[in-house]
Length: 220
Image (cartoon, rainbow, N blue to C red; front, side):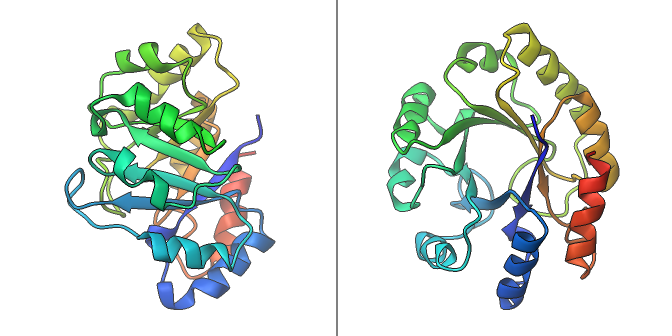
């Protein structure tokens, strides 16, 4: 499976968004990573539905929704989810996670389960055949610019083994949080194939186009 880059809009300068989107489209960014936060499931607020609808008018790049809200079923219908999008739901965010995943699938998108650093991986064994991907958080979600939580590299190795055990090599294995150029290469060697790029890589300087190319080279 081709490695994919999902650019974190949480890390962009909103006053420079048109130029940033142009760089993304010209240099092969695969997805726009949208952090949806309610201030309850995580201690921060994210983008809203009006922003999402406006963003659709300025880019053809599909969206990679990372939904960090309590009871996500209540807001799924507001997000303008489309066929080529990805949607990650946290295991702990829903009282009936399987039902929530099924609700998301009604939009014909790819459905993913998000795993926090402290979420036990045994939950994947119950859900592995209901999902199209796994979003492994390398930091505790809510804020950009964090340092990777200790042992998350080992956790990524465990996820890769679990994917092979259940013969689900077809699914996306996304990693999110402190995905520097070095960490991206390391996680790619482990088996990750999708990388949320933020302040540690493509937004590490104002040279966004050059940084995208550097990350792409690290993932070859």
